[in-house]
Image 1: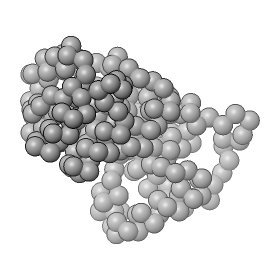
Image 2: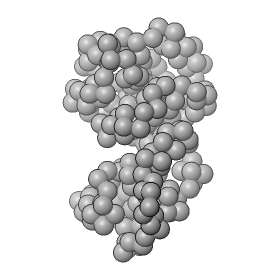
Image 3: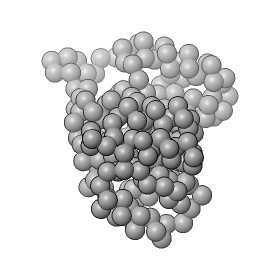
Length: 220
């Protein structure tokens, strides 16, 4: 059973999500938060698997709430459902630790798939968010097809990271230690001059290492 907290300042959004999920097996809404204080209390008392969160109301929530909740409840993952499509905010949210990001235009199937993916600590980004991320990383006037000296192992780790696999899962799949996977990631980021897993996803998509279709339910 996936325990969910709804954190959205708008009553109609929370009401709509409750009705949307009412007939979905395997999920349980354990609380609703209308502001940061209520969210922190629920994180401490319920330790939800997933917080469905819209940070885009500065009088009630902020992006910083993501880190704050994860300090209280490290096992809680965030699914953002927001109308905010500001590039800097999208990146800040992802870098703050939110695994998944949908817009409020997404349908029921996407929302349900995103919930279960997020509960399993997998990334789930809708097409619009992927497009925002990719556009952010288009370097005008530069050669985007520049070759990098990546090993086959490093390329494989990029592909698995783009699918939302954790370092521990990758290590088990490739029969490596978790430390070795982190070392490979560090070397990859140094070679590609990137700073995060989200940028690694962009690199994988832009350079044909993985397609949106290959990402399946992890990134839609």
